[in-house]
Image (cartoon, rainbow, N blue to C red):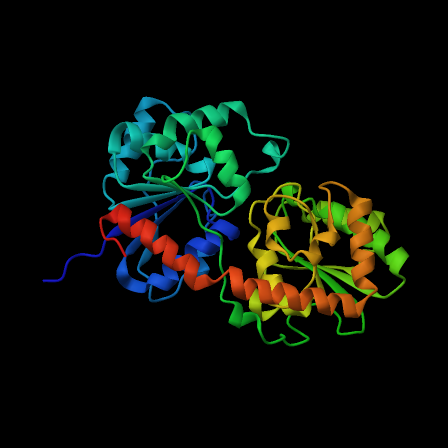
Length: 376
């Protein structure tokens, strides 16, 4: 008889597609049918990332799991612990899953690996003290805490987590997928004219500060005096605010919101340059994908962005929230095709050298395998 496949539980506050969800799916797809996966999304119906899980991967969306959100009363934590005991490995993601981490420490004691990928807009100015204390209480029950960025690696000390329990694993991609330019019609609704295309890929959430990107783009158009368009790929609650900013700044006909598009390698190379306007990031995978496609980047200087891009590209980073500085970077890149090509090729080479998908998968396999008692 063959041994049953290990059962892995994934605890997410939301499993709609974002950076951490995309990486989780990438790992599931890489491991195929070696494990059985159960995914908890504490927000009802927020499980869009499951659409990208391959047919060869045995998985289900939990319907019977106790809620991850709510007052951390002993009864609810005990109920969570009873549920966790049915799995060989528990993977928890961000603060929204911290009740599961605490329940595991107090009552379940299953092998658990916790992942922290960043903060929402309510912690842009700094961590909430209550959340720091709660992490310090819960995280001793995690075998490992995994972060993608140098910034989070430093912050984790405030949670009482240090190496070797703390592991930094940079996000990686399959750079070869981005080698060929996509078709000109790969972004629905984007006209195929001679305009320079500024593009970004993001969840349309307040922390991404996309209305600021619209404002900076409008300022850059006036300076560069070269036809350009702004494509914002993604969906989320800030769509109305983005459209309102485009109307306010007189660029509504130049701003395009095609919604969510899967498989970034099929369209991100349609941009001429990549932009990021976030107030907070850690290790933005969309930036790495854009670099793999040979794009220069005009970004806010947040998280690990400065460490990710090449040294020359760092001149085009702007302080978070500084629309005028970001506009100057956009205008310079819109107006100089040779500069875009030079920066883009250097960025492409850096991704191939530093941010390999295979290296990322091997690192996670070693961490999860050790937690399962099956070292790689």
